[in-house]
Image (cartoon, one colour):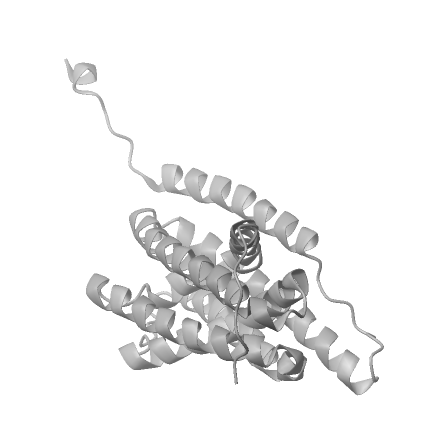
Length: 246
């Protein structure tokens, strides 16, 4: 049973902090969702993200109530890591084979994949939010409100990223490298959590720090975007100005 909830004016500042925390911990999720729904038509892309949004609300509500047990879900993060790494490998193998085509996932399989990936990423953000607010059971609404606002913003960002990648095809490879990098992040997180469980509190395997992840992400974006733009320019045919023909 959910205990009575309380409100103070200072709680508004806490919600803002939690929204920023959700954005920092799950911003990579927006890009991954954009890549996962990209093969669908624009209308189905919006529907998949909306259905994923509903699932994200439900899972975060349940996760906040059972936050202490989330560490036992390390295997979900492991599955998410394998899925993301598999998607990256699949993309580049397909790109390296001329004439090779892989049938994209159906609409509902895409929605399920979106839900599972969101769960894999949400465990860290929920635990961080619970730790930030504390164990005051009358403030559960704060954690959920911050998570809901953050998730809505991420879904909007995912939609914008989908349109951006569709417009600039050279960025697709860069996006998939970041998807793989996020998979590596989940690998570290799953290994860290499982090592805590099986050694009774002593973390044998380190988790990837957020600083390392973001430095890697910015490096991939910077180098990848530069290479993608240069390649696109080199492949574009030279256009002669009409004045040169006079």
